[in-house]
Amino acid sequence: MTKVEAFLAQRFTHMMAGDVPLWQRFLAQHGEYFDRFEYDIHVGQGVDLDPAWPEEIVTAALALTRKRIDAVGYRGNEVWLFEVKPDAGLSALGQILAYKALWERGKGKPAVMYLAIVTDRLNPDEAYLFDTHGIRAYIVTP
Image 1 (cartoon, rainbow, N blue to C red):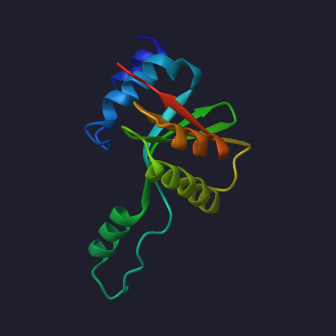
Image 2 (image 1 turned 45 degrees about the horizontal axis):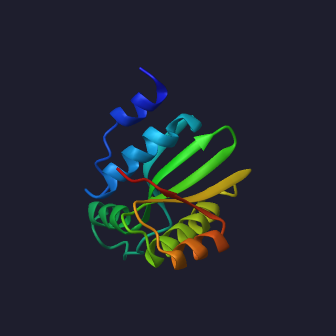
């Protein structure tokens, strides 16, 4: 089994139904570049509940309210944060920039970090804004 086949064999249960085919096409086209991927990576602190609440409620609330990165790719000392979204717009821009800040606050600044959006459509305004912020856009179509 090739590396890309192994990546494609994984289940992406955390991704929305429309995200999975985009991610699979991205892996088929670009997966060979990466050493490995992690999915559904929590960053940030989440809500701060009163400690008087039962421990299982506090734990569940934290798990549900922390921000979640769709995919993190690794290659050597490179860390890639991915937002996967059909018809990516300004929400994707805000999410990926927030993930970067929260990653760095919680995990430290990696030697090399790239931000990327995986989508099927991208209008010129978002393409311009992604480029302005150094975010790579991967447009993967069937």
